[in-house]
Amino acid sequence: MPKTARARKQREPFGRIRKLPSGRYQAAYTGPDLNLHRPSGTFGTLLDARGWLATERKLIDGGDWLAPTVRNRAQPTTLAAYSAQWLDRTDGRRQPLKPRTRDLYKRLLEQKITPTLGDLPLKAITPFVVREWYATLDPALPTRRAHAYALLRTILGWAVSDELIAVNPCNIRNAGSHTKRVHKIKPATLGELEAIVAALPDRYGVMVLLASWCALRFGELTELRRSDVDLKAGKVMVRRAVTWVDGEPIVGAPKSDAGVRDVAIPPHLLPVVRQHLADHAAWGRDGLLFPAPMSEKQLGHGTFFKTWDKARTGAGRPDLRFHDLRHTGATLAAQTGATLAELMSRLGHSTTAAAMLYQHAATDRDTEIARLLSRMVEV
Image (cartoon, rainbow, N blue to C red; front, side, top):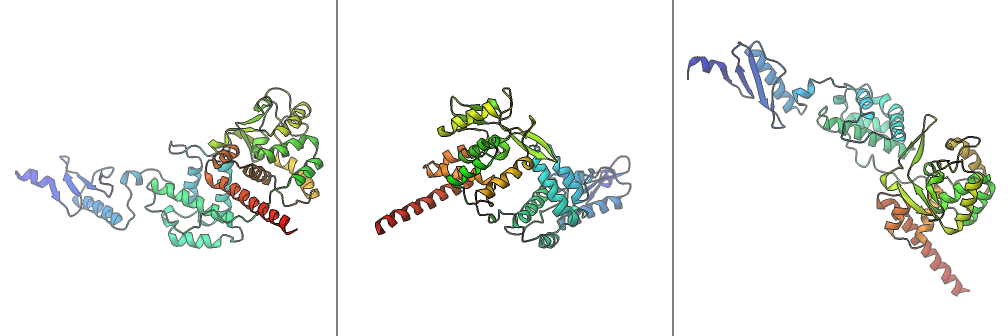
């Protein structure tokens, strides 16, 4: 081989270097991803090219390697900067966050995560740092604590997939798992429901009845319109839900895909629903069933819950949340002998776990019935 050809190639312990006709040096190496990587430019001296290869080898050996093309991009350097980008991310790998979900994540970041970790570079957030931060979260608020940890783990998981960090430092076992329910739900009895409805203004009575007997969510109920109710078929069609973000109503799809559903109305409710449509619903095909007083806008939590608090307290159930009415309806449906699939369809659940809770409640009720039957013999 001619001397000029030998002079242009250098055998290196890691990677390879080639001398270009221009006299400059080009370096390259095969990375952990088995792809060939080069710097963005060339080097004026052989020593500089070797120095670049040595630096890359050190990053690989230390577990801090990222592809040079990734490192050369404009990257958010801190958790706060990366989280802000992540909240609004729409790069095809996920659907945009729903407004209420985005608002929840934003508040968790502002209140629980970024005050402590926000100014840290992503690579500085080690497992030790995460454990120290997690220890500062109030254990008296286990659900909030779990949600904050799960959000941090999710965001840093995306940072791994973006090749900004090598591994996810969130490795605390069960820290982001669903916690044991603090509020023990006691479904309303039929007598309690009757007392609550009697104590409410007439415009709200049917809303409570549909929440209880059809297991509808507050956001689903307050976005129902005349066109969503088919009295002839005896059903209500859930197609949308309203959430409130910064005091503004945001109308979108229900909580999950399974939330889009038709729910049969128990026949005994049809006359009161018909009367409500005549007396209280807004006019027109798209008129709201439960508009805010003196308005055709959606009913907000604050407007309704002042009246709700007074009614539930008067019925002897100050602990009964409005969402607990959905549990009441689900338990009643389970006690009819509804199958798991039927419960999931009626409630708009996408997983079996929640529906199983109501089947267990029905089983507990059956045990109580058996106990009462035995008491008949004892008498």
